[in-house]
Image (tube, rainbow, N blue to C red):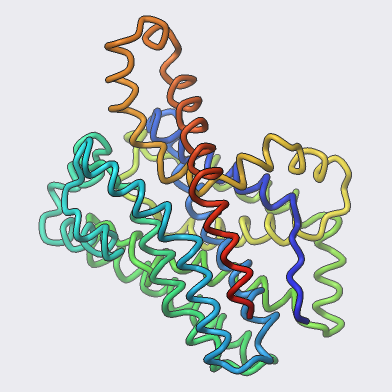
Length: 356
């Protein structure tokens, strides 16, 4: 297979992965579950990236990896460093080199490991502008390591076995850190939150399998997998709510994570395969698809709207009278749209020069 099919409904799902993150950063008590929008993003990324690697695995390994890394750099770096540079020059970014080199997630982990009493400071989005970039650091570390490892896994059951073993290893690390370092932000390192990325990779391998068992799974996905996955995720959130109404770090409590990973994976596989006109009609709704297409920019920009909005409100009575949530969301969409048209989309055209 040398073509990659684009399913528009996954663009809509991307928007609904971003929206909970925006909500939790607006009100962590009411929308405490919003952090897991990042986990859904991870599952989507693991699934789509692995599909790319499978689609072109008959090409020479170095050619595939070279094209993969170059195309990822075009997609990720320009917008990331643009937003990071503007934020550093305006609101200021603490520990800027950690962001520049995509290791901020490890920095927060070690910071909260050595001084667990300062975990609230580490997670304060006002004092730590750009804290949400931790997930982009995780994804970049995944993009660097996983394609190389995957290229050495031969197609067949052995590949699925090794991915499942990697998934189990991540689960083991999660319980280990939960027992030994319960106050540390261990959920930010790929050893733990990589479970969601690997779950997506497992889904891609199962989907690419041509065996009768895999065919039955795909047939089931068209009918019940998306609603079943959504129901599982909702049930997990209903069973767990932090006593304090907030969370110290994502991927906590440890015993809920694998259920959420399975639920999100079922949602992604189900939505990918569904033939339900109601589900497709909802996720293919044009505004949702567009917001999903610019979700990377939305995620990059959204937390920096707080100080910008305060600055604008002090100078405009019209803006100051708007509901804070609506003003932040509207400004985020406006700036992300501008960045998409002026920066991201033009640069992505260069991908045509980097075929697999």
